[in-house]
Each structure stands twice: as structure tokens, then as C-alpha cells.
Image 1 (cartoon, rainbow, N blue to C red):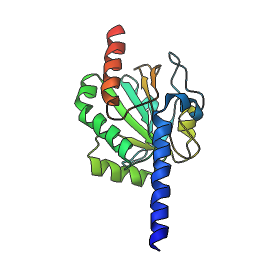
Image 2: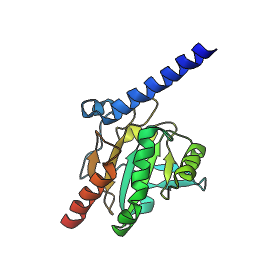
Image 3: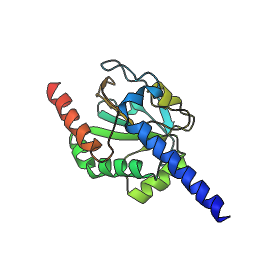
Length: 184
């Protein structure tokens, strides 16, 4: 029994190490499929939200900038760190008329628990079949890859991030968002 538990723990840890490696390695970013084209309309979608109050569409945020980030799984170390950094910087995003939206293959219930646990004040959307992740080139068979997209208030995709380091990603996104807003 003990050896089985050790085996399963090792297998689980190896699996998430692989997912993390795939998420932060730029050379394998293409595994997720074709990324949408910058300066074109961002692909529209509608997904259920962590609040359980229905669904959220990208078009619900017309008139605001949107940081749309895809991540592998709730409660894992990299994903938790990335979510915490976005939450920590949330006032800066709000000052820039920007909505943060997270997407993964986790269920609405998992997202609700994750938001409660981490005190997240932005929506997490349940892409359980990976349909939206696929459209955004962020799907590797069973989980979303760590990719982020900036969408402008008219719904145009303005930036794509791959090869993400969760510890500093929010800072990078804020800097690029500032550049984009200053240029427009």
C-alpha cells in the first residue's frame, strides 16, 4: 500500500512538472496549436464562471481592456502564484480600465474553491472541454497551456504571451498594457 502511494505521488508530481515545463518553454508553445493573430478580432467565446451565476462572454467586456489568461490547473504551485500576482496587481489593472479573466479546464466548482481559497476578485471560466483553449492555441490534450492575451476595448487582440514565468508575469503584462494604452 505504501509503495503504491509513493508511486502515485511520484507519477502525479512528474505529470505536473511536465505541464509546467510545457507551459514555460517557448520552443514547445506551438504544441497548443495556432495562436490567434495579433491585430485581428479576438475569438469570441462564452463560458461558465466560478460564481455559478451563469456564463461570461468576451463581448461582455467591450469598452474595457481584457487580460485573458489560460493556465493548466487550479491549486498547483505555478497557477496559484500567477493568480496571486494578478490579484495583487488588480487595483492597477482596474485603474487602467482592464478586466482580468482566467481560463482553465477545471470545473466551476474547482474555480469557486480556488477563488475562495486565494481571495481572487476576478472571474475564472470553466473550459472543461477545451473548446476555447483550442481556439486560442492554448490546449495540449487535457489542460490549457499557460498563455495570456491582451484584448483592446474594441475586441481586437493586441498582444500574446507564451513562455510565461508566473512569478513576474503580471508585471510584464502591466508594462505591455501601459505601452499599448499609451500608443492608442
